[in-house]
Image 1 (cartoon, rainbow, N blue to C red):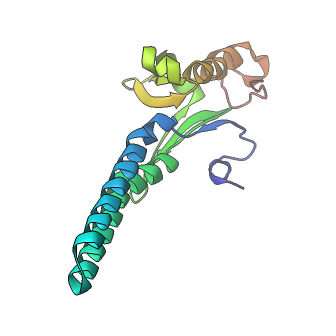
Image 2 (image 1 turned 30 degrees about the vertical axis):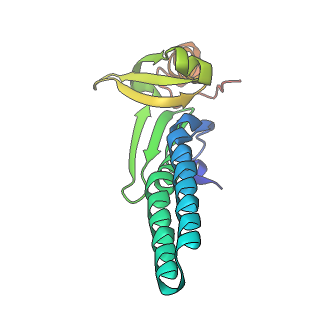
Image 3 (image 1 turned 180 degrees about the vertical axis):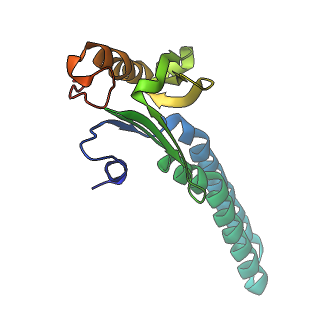
Length: 182
């Protein structure tokens, strides 16, 4: 049983599990390439122009600096991306994020009052966007970098409005619904 499945209630069905769009990893990848090139250049200059203990110390310093910057600018964003989950079940929307401090937000389907999406030209080219979920008692919640945001919007709209309103067996609530999105 994987991460989202272990958070589900009995008989709750997972409909969608996504991490943010890969565009979040673009700048960390660029940083990794640049810092590796700079470290390689620095190591080459050090090897060519120094000898003995000084050379070893400089190479060790370059290695330590490379590791620290790569962890800070590339590995940390990768872990943050991997630990961010956007989940839709037949009963609720779950958002989980964080590595050391784990935060979560659950929105029951019957509390959703509005579902919108927004994406500009660049987001449309990448197939991503912002999903905006309005709930009955709170300010709308915005989730950036949702892959295939139009399909996610359609799924969430279907689950929150069509299934609840069209299922005579649920008694006006959503939890009795047995419909699933194809």
